[in-house]
Length: 344
Ligand code: NAD
Image 1 (cartoon, helix red, strand yellow):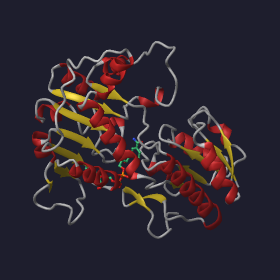
Image 2 (image 1 turned 90 degrees about the horizontal axis):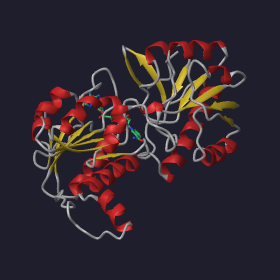
Image 3 (image 1 turned 120 degrees about the vertical axis):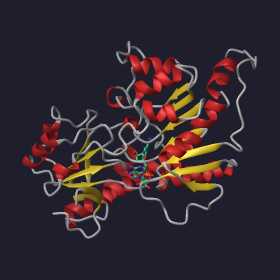
Image 4 (image 1 turned 180 degrees about the vertical axis):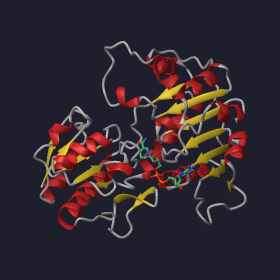
């Protein structure tokens, strides 16, 4: 079995080569992303393996089908870059629903601690033998209220971490988990209540039509002054221009972003020798109270191994049995994991 692997990075290869070899799957690694211009590279392969910023739209799906591609294997959990409605019944789409919620949740806390304790500033100062503490005053997380939007696998781990710090949790989820609300330190509330009462807001829901710009100007106006916004989920959950304005007006006290709505033009690549054309990203990065990481929350050794193992299993299941428990299907007008293998 031969798979064209798009948007390949050096850190992908060891784990995919290992699990591919064990399962008779050979990967051809392409550095380029999959899109309408590069789809021809899939010619002669049984499937394609893609990541968060590859484009799997209607035109790409049509061409993949013409090329005889059986499966699009997402090596990630989110699938907002796939036109699921169009793909349904044409091509198998599989994903890795969970690989390490700890990786993303721990990175979220790393960003939060870095921000509130000014670690990013301290690191630069002490490297320059500047041991002054002026402007370094942080605040305790203990006793603060964190609002968690999306209480799935990652949201729940982040909730546990926050509770370990002695924080109160307000949660919002379209599909709340029964038993999670203890009526005391963890409470399910409406979005508006969460916005108005959280010191810190962390986004852990998927990007859907419902959640696009869930943090926009209106939402930010409802927040407490000085709120900290954490986004390690998907960039377009936040209206970045509105966030920038709210940072400038001091309504937002700090922002920690591992994702950005226009990230596909920049993230994962080295632009250190270039002039960045994106003024919003450049302005955000210039702010002392904004920390940007380039979609690295998933990047732990454990996660890379789990991603490769599950992706190889997904591909093998589809190519040998035409079904996989991790197949995404778009039936009844919404995308969900296929429960009975009857997507086609
Ligand atoms: P999950 O499916 O386990 O949880 C998502 C939760 O969001 C569910 O509880 C669901 O009910 C809830 N939800 C769905 N629609 C909602 C809505 N309209 N409003 C509020 N909540 C809603 O997913 P997960 O594994 O916890 O991952 C969450 C997100 O994290 C993914 O969708 C992905 O975008 C992102 N992610 C980012 C990285 C990274 O490296 N930065 C890595 C993995 C995942």
